[in-house]
Image (cartoon, rainbow, N blue to C red; front, side, top):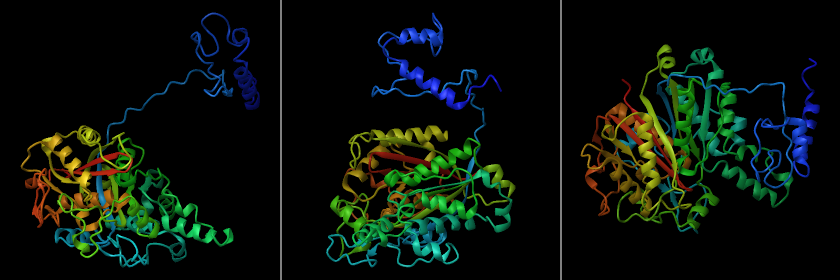
Length: 493
């Protein structure tokens, strides 16, 4: 076509025009863009304003011009918001690798925290964690890959496939899915720490000793990528890493892909395997961990006056989210409905919560607005509460500000039994929230022997499980960097 300039020619013209901004630019602009109000981009440049072709550094930038193309208007398609439901759950945790086993242990108040056995930590001030003692990838991950992958990837892939199995996605149904509309969004806070740490040790000898997969297997996105390759799912596939808020960020973003009509099915959640020397040592250096080594089961004690830091945990939690009509069409069992959520940032401190809880309050209020519910609808909160001095109190104050005196409200912390699974925490806690909806029981807060005086213990679940007809469940997750996230689930009606 004679009217279309070759790409190289177009680029050269653009480069020349860009470079022209400088001495005598007015004359050249008149030459190329005409006189009067037209100018190069259809408007006269303000006196003293930068030339559009020049970067802030002063270096000219080439701008590809396509004068033969008219102005392209961005038209947003009006899509009626679609409902999102939970149809499957998968977990790998210190309290079991099946959603029902996991939740039954929570209801019974079983602690998954014990002495670390994976490596010698006798010289560390903290020697306890929510460590997974028994785990097998048989039937879930190819043996060749299982030998090379970091544990965070093994946990992720296993929990993801278990969520599919739990959701009734048989081989026959899998073959019928439109895989271009199925995605994976499972994140990690820490990624492949062990693989990367081993690579550094190998490098001390020679680069030739390094695992050739050490770079890809250390990145946080590769777990979702490998799982998608295994399933053949071609929809949205990426990871989000927002420290301990990672899972909730992934869940809400996955749900939004469905809400916007971009996908029908999403696997989402988080996975982390930080219980290795560098992981333990790093958090010890932060002075963030409990040192109650003599009584591991009593170490994680959110809101208790004797808490002395959080306890590390490991594992993965994954939800299978599905568009409602898609789920109905395949006859799926619907566990709960995802209503909405929100993200905010404290913009205050790397590790400390905002003293007035502004970011958390804003996050909860925005989540309620996104879900279309009022504060009186919330009668169960699975709190972030990690067993740290400031974090527990500031979250509780924010809950008071948001929900006021609501005698129906029940609040608990899964971390009192699992420890803190970092980027996976929100994943397993979302499973706990959905299980509370399914069973009508909320799990206890263990080790809450002497609640803080500024905490209203009447809304905290006690040392035994309690009956609760959940109307709307709120699950909070917050992370280093001031990342706040809240997601909401309700019974499907």
